[in-house]
Length: 362
Image (tube, rainbow, N blue to C red):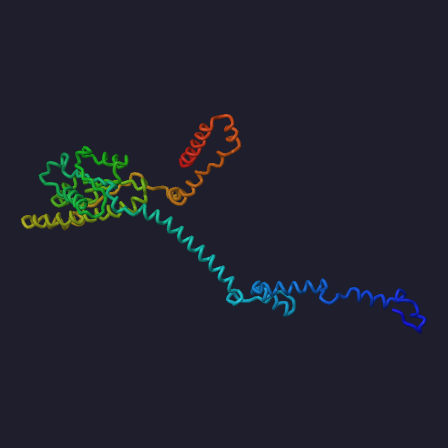
């Protein structure tokens, strides 16, 4: 560019000053029609991305934008039931439902095992054998008193009636006193040897002592001397207290009632011809009511009480810990694999894993 008539601009465009240089550089940097600058290209790309994916802006981003509009600080907290947290609530409830349903199914499956194990308990009660040994008037001198046995036959008939009733009950086994040589100690030995869960013994002098109390006014008569119950609750305290003891207690109550009714009726009938029986009975009332009782002998009580955890919750942990066999996978055992036959190593591991819980449970 040449400007004539002025000495400053008499030179050609090559000698233009800084202003012309800047203007020329701006003209060179200015894009031509149809072209875009790099900054314009970036803005266009950002707009295209926003227009192509309008759904990526979620509630949290909206909240952030709101916070930025308010002053550029953190987003404003909102309540749990805010509409912008709908997707969070949905995800939380879904996971909670899956977890709860899974736990319910697992617990139901485990409890079903116990339900199945106890499903036929009533039908299997007959496998719990309880002896009823009738020694009443079976050995001298009580076999020659001149009075027919009363207590023993009534209780034995009651046991037979319960077995024949068809209702779930214990395995009552009625045995004569001769099976144990009319010795109550031998009956206790049978219970101690786990031949039966319990035994009810009608003592040889059961009926004879009743007659003696009324006829001879024996004020020291003790109804508990007529019969005895022998058992071992420590054999299995759950079986005894949950299944056996309730039925045995009901049996003894019914036996006492039946003997008392028949014995009182017999005394009153004889009193019509012998008025002294009524006076004697008034002096020995326990000979009429309850007439008989049951002495109870627990051969092996569940004692001391500190052993309760070993058969309850402590037993669970004992079983779990006793099967820890990680020590059998130490390097020394793998070293043996290269020197011995594999089947020998396997047999040794099985032996160790089996003997470990057995020794711990001792």
